[in-house]
Every structure is written in structure tokens, then in C-alpha cells.
Image 1 (cartoon, rainbow, N blue to C red):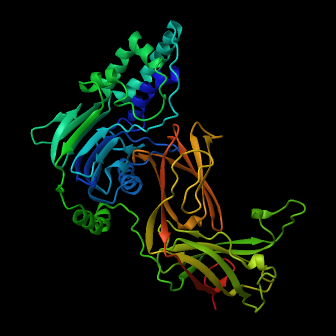
Image 2: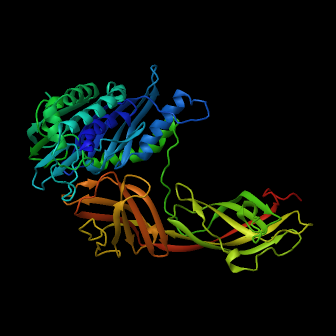
Image 3: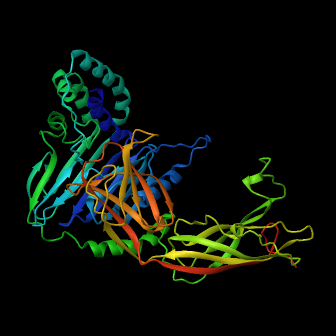
Length: 539
């Protein structure tokens, strides 16, 4: 019962708390199919977690914030008109135009929050009609519990909890204000709790001070507290907006959800493909001009060899005794070199490798006798997937050796130039549910051992490297927000874990985007004439 009421307090205040006292303006243009763009502008107080005592400069914080916006926002296809600056009052100002193929999947990273815009929903009916909403409500047939009897003591206890939380909450809500403009296709038929503007757009304002005033008033409303406490509804599921008529009326003027419907939506408001393509083309130069380093996707590798192989580091272990538990660097006796190589393009993974030759400058063979020790284990890829870091292990060079004459071997990497979406055929989010594709099975759904999240474990009969993305949808087709909670994989078997703050709905579907038409290539590598510290060997 207490959780039910405090949900309203926490859900509303977290909008500001996570945002770092955010002020934002979001101007959406949405095409009939749900694609579109949003002109986003945000001001917020940066939150620093630097424990060294040295605060980063305002300019550096602004650059990092805009870099995070373009790199970490979800559902965004391209960015244009990106800008940033540090304001005199200490806040950060970032802005840009984001292009999205589906507005329902948008979540913009702005300061400490990573879900700006995630409350916006758009559902076309396939016949020129649509509904726009604000406040995602995730369906769950099993989430509701029977109505509870509420006593006066219960109400008094919850009121006390709310009174204790309000002072902290007011510090965040007092400076939060999010304004939205919606430019919609066709003719707007009805709009509830959205303002109709003279230019034909719809408007919405989420005002922190108004929220604070509403919660203060509701805290003293016994009838409201009793109704919420005894409703038996799922306490932490979905959005607070539209869940309570009285709260909605106090915040936006009318009871009911924030929603609009439209008809005659047959013509696009702009050419999405053309504008998004132009934005992608101009993006690298735009970010370069801003002085912000942003990753540019590398082209897939073409199967050619490794180049520019250099030494990244060395380990020299002269004494090691496994039986005594004395193992420097947790390694056996030997000489290890970490190499960095440039791949011919982006790859999915470097799956295996083998050291085939290792000699020092005296001609001595340093190749390990054991095949396992000659294998290259756990190579890692750069963020762009076009560089590889791997370790090779050898026997110790002799006392007369000054360097390494030659190290050579092979690496095997995987490339894919296509992706495809696969509906797993799972219809129930329950332990033991099986699908019709990719050997899909939900192994378990239950509370996490480490947090309050509900965790779903999904087993697939595909290599981990072939999985690009996993999306969850409820029975109505609305995306479900989940967070990756870990993975385990071996060969062609992969188990993925996904966490959710509330219960998964009883039914829905899971779509996996996999890399298609995988190709395997083996490439040689070689390093010659280096001293024992990995530097070029002098004559």
C-alpha cells in the first residue's frame, strides 16, 4: 500500500532527479509511419562524480555532454545541427536535431538522464488514423493485485513518508520544465491535455513546480490517499501520466490521459530518408568542427590481412610456482607480448588465433611446447571493431638474447555485411516459454539476486557475436524498455539476461536483430626485430 502511493511521489520527482534539474524543449515532426525528427534543446546542471577533487572545466563538461548525447541516445538514426556551450550560471546547454525511424524507440541522453522523450508514443492504424500519447503504460495481466482494505493508520503513515520526502523532492522539481511541440500529419481530430496552437501544432508542458504543488495538495487529500492505497493496481509499472484522473486534471487541466488522435495521415511531412542521409553524410565534419571526437562506423572488413602490428606491452615472468601459489601477474614463467593490429575493416569478432613462430635474435626457438599455450586466447576489439588487441606467450629468452627476431602466427575473424530481424515466436514472458526461431527459450523470469529488478534469461542457439540487438514488445506492439543484465556464451549457445524495474507483461514478443551471411577469414600477423621491451631493435 505504501509503495502504491509513494510511486507517484518518486516517479514524478525522478523525472527531475535523473535529469539534474533539466529544462528542455523538444519539437517533434512525425510522419504517418512514425518516423520523424525532433529538434532538441536542453539546459541542465552537470553532476560530477570525480573523486580526485579536480573539477573538469565547464567547456570539457559541455563537450562530454554533447558527445554522450550523440553516442548514447537510443532509437536515433542520425544527428544534425548539433551545438553546445557552458552557460554563465554553471549549467550546460546542448542542442541538436535527431532523426528517428520510430518515435516509440527514442530515448535521448541529456546530462544524467538517458530517457528524454521515452514517454512519447505514436500508433498508426494503417488507414490514415493514429493516436499520439505521452506516458507509456505497459500492459500486464498478472501485475494487478486484489484491492486492499486501508485503515486510517495506513493513511497517516504514508502521509508522514511523503512529508519527509517532499523537501528533497522540491529541490529538483522547482527547476524542472520540459516543453514539447508536436507537428503531426493529417488532421488532428481530438486532443486531451494537449494545447492546440495557432500554427496547428500541439503543445505540452511538464512543469516541476506544478508537480510539486499537486503532490503537496494530494498529500493532504484523505480521499485520494485512500483510493490509491486500496486500488490494488501494480505500484511501479508504467508512467504516472494518465494513471490518475485527479493528478492529471491538476497538472494539465483535464482528467484522463495525455493523448491526441488524427485522421487523413497519408502524406509525409518531410522526406525522412533524404534528410537523414544528408545528416549522416555531414555528421563527421560537423563533429570535427565542434572539436568533439565521435565514432564513425568503420566499413566491414573485406577479408584482407592485418596491418600495422605494433607492441602494446610486455610481461616478463622469471619466477612462478603454481603449487606454492606464487604466480606474478597470475601467470606462469614466460615472456608475454601484447600486440595491437589494424584490421582491414570492422569485424564482429576475432574468434581464435595461433602463434606459429617465435625466435630470439640468437636464433633460439621460443615457441611453447604445449599447443594450448601457443593458442591466442580472448583477443579484444576496439569500439569501432577495426583494431584488435591480443596476447602471445613464449618461453623466456636466453641470457644472451637482446631481442626478438620474429613473432608470427594467424588470427581468424568474422565479418557480416547484412542484418535481419527475427521474431523468435515467443508469445509468453514466463519461465520455460519456447519460441519457433533460433532455438529460443526463456529459461527463467524472476527477481534478481543483486537488485530489485525483474530479470528474464533468454537462451538462443546462435553465436553471441551474431547478435546485434534484442527488442521486447508487449501484446499491443509497444516497445518494452529493458536493460542488459549480463550474458554467457560458448560456441553456438548464448544466454542473455535482461532487467526491468517492474514485472514483465504476461504476453508479448521478442525480436532479435542478427548479423546475416557471416564470413570467416584467417589472416597472418608478424612482428620482427624488436628488443625485449618491444622497441625496434638497434643494429
